[in-house]
Image (cartoon, rainbow, N blue to C red; front, side, top):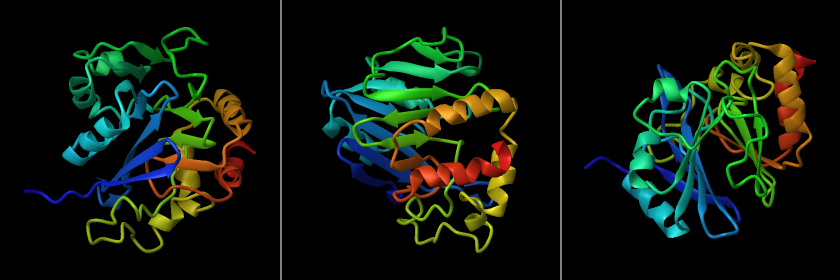
Length: 240
């Protein structure tokens, strides 16, 4: 039996993260899904890692999963696992998913549905779509906990928590630390995703206007201090 390497913890009341080891080539990026307990008792889930036994048990304990949501069109590998496990949940994707995942029926698609379309959670989780991002990323803001949840809009390596059950540090000296807000490689990584600077700037400003105090990225450790300053630091050399 393979070792369970998923780290599950509540980072704020009603917000549970699932951190897993993940490498892109040799680079230890780490991976993460995030679940939010909604006021009606249901669960909103940004699904970005494999549905292992410990994740399934934790989700079932939280409550019925009402939404399975993707953060961009690259983090789609495990959506079918979650939809199969929770067939009653609404599946919300982003532009490109319907062509990429033809076997799945989406209940909503950011970037395809009309601007302003809502799916049922927007009173509690505000949404900023980035059409100018190469992967059509979406930022989600959980109002009650002041938590910003995102995938490839900001990295915060090393991914210590994601690799904490593996015996690995989740770090390559100098390299991984450079892929964090203010790191010299972070600018290069984020800059490669910006395909429409004017559109991207509009979306960036919408996120900046949100009252977030924490950032939960898919890749790297959670930012619990100076989160808004880190957001600005990451983009200052790219957007001014």
